[in-house]
Image 1 (cartoon, rainbow, N blue to C red):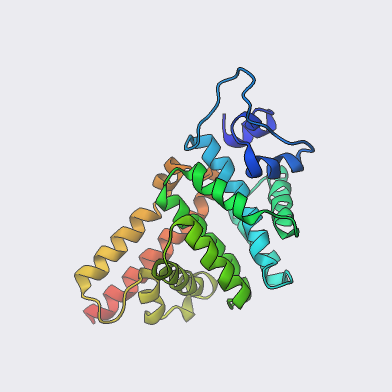
Image 2: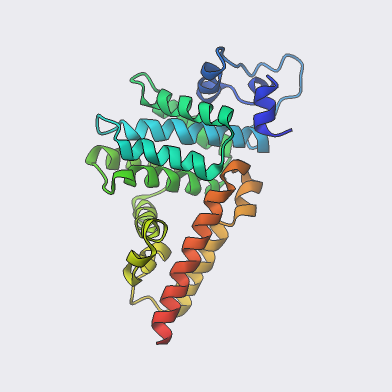
Length: 257
């Protein structure tokens, strides 16, 4: 049974407790607990538990980030809805995602506790944490700019998830460049392509290729799902691998001219 099936079946409380379980429990009108009650318990790192944690953290932190500058813009709400569209969420899951987003906007949202639990649930799965970070950076760019408050929150989030400033800068550039592929392919230029791969015009081609292969491996849909990415989000992974391939092709074409 999937994480969603277990949630509907009322057993996810035995998979996921803590602040993330509380966020899910609020939607269903009660708080989950993970006491087990004699039933088998999933441990941090188990597939369904990680999937539930990723889903709950993604939309709640996105809501918190949207409110970081004091107001939630139409673009930020639109991006959250677009994300739900791309995931092709059925109506009940979409309602849960909206509930999580709205809970993240509340003044009493415990950002630190939610992120701490999410990191713990992922059990050092760096590719999964990076995917989560990229989604949040993408959300921050919904209005085409990074507000100082959003920037500070992203820096804090990155530090909590184990990314240093240089890695955060690379993620921001990847998202910024990839956004041009997604929004308007005609705007996607060579500078964007270098940004997506995290290299420069001076980087030797073997190093460019190495960066391309590394990023492709980090974003491979099957690998991410096996690590705990909710299957509903596989389209996002497919989209990111397409953006990475597009960047590689553009650089290769330019250098062979």
